[in-house]
Length: 141
Figure: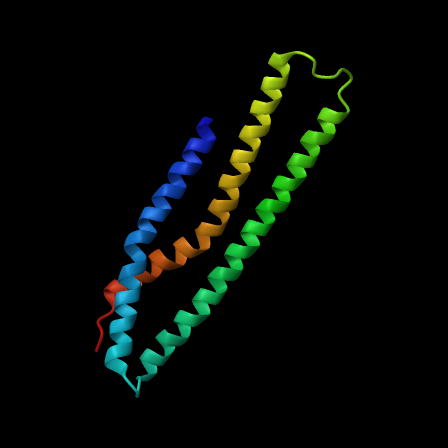
């Protein structure tokens, strides 16, 4: 794994750990709010509940779009790599050249997978951590 991929994997790990703490806080706050609101939620509670649903849909859409965009870029890079290998003036006959080519392709696929994962995780992470901070300041009435 090269240095850039290690940094990307570390960032994904950090975001995942932050999500492990933020998501239960947000869920606990909102469930407590729903419990207190019961059958007649206040206007403030209704806004929060509506926001909760809208944010989930928006985060899913953004994640899906980011992952699709990263997959498109990865497919283009792979096609370019294969086309350039196909049109090389001499075939790769030495085992050292073949190993280098395989190593490069492996690193490219690994980097692409990390970018897809990072793109999909970022919108969810951004919303969940922001909600945890915002809801930590709000007192349930």
